[in-house]
Image 1 (cartoon, rainbow, N blue to C red):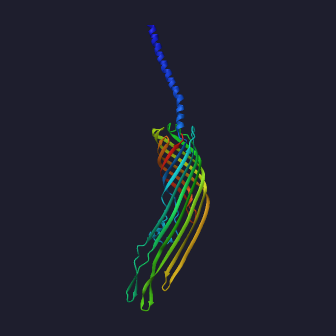
Image 2 (image 1 turned 90 degrees about the vertical axis):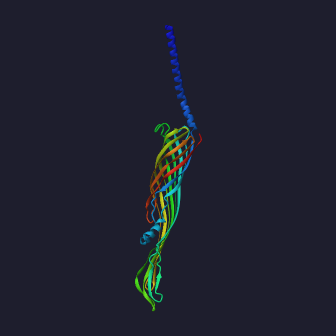
Image 3 (image 1 turned 60 degrees about the vertical axis):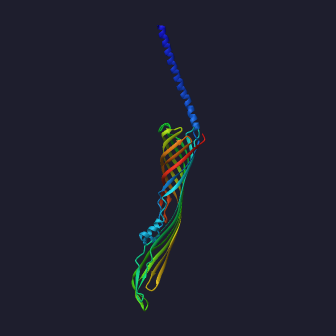
Length: 384
């Protein structure tokens, strides 16, 4: 009986030792194979990413209105035509591209990014008064009553403008996001250099007759048999022209943080992730404005016996330049659909450049250049 018990005990110990050894081998195999699998996974990752996309940008930039002195004489409806013609575009299509290099077996990322936007605008608005009551001049003659229609007040504005902006970034970053939001999340911290350029050109032509009316009733004698009373008309007519060119060039250090966290899917083949990021830069550069405008006018007043005309002309030009400091902050948030060698992203992005341009006419007037709106990008991975 004892031999049977000993034999059974030896069998149970054998099975126990066998399971223990298999478990140890499996664990060792996992430890040994996992680095190779990860290395294999790293080998399959693209080393070069090319990204391109676009954005509908809302342009939030203050603009000085060309307002000659005769604006103060104009009725609101006449004035609105000349002011409205100078209204800038509120939206602009933007394009962007990016190329990044991620060396194999490294968390470092080297990237170059460019963003460009351009908008052109042309407006022509015209308004004239619907017609003042006709002026009736009484002449005691065979014809009885003569009716003379009154000339109209009017305002006419024409403008053409073009504006563009370019932003270039050269950065070196490191992925520090391993384990931050989960095993497959990423957080890329980058530093580098940002270059920004803003330029615009505008041409404005205004025509207006803001003043037209009649003086008091006065006696009139044309020939002895024609006599009566009448009122003498007066009017002021103006033309004003503006040409302005503005530019800003600036460069400085930049920092950015971009993060991505998977929401669903297999991170190795296909996944949906939420992306977000912030950026900041300190730019140093120069602003320049070249601007000239001139206004001409004619004052015409019919006296009792003669007409009196006076001509008005005023012209000025400015060419100013100054060094500037432009703080810049921005950010984005969106969703992306990721594959092994491709990515499609949608989101909302904004970039804000403070005191970036000089929008003044006769004197400097610092203005911000802000760009914000929805964007979409496509990325393709190469190498692996």
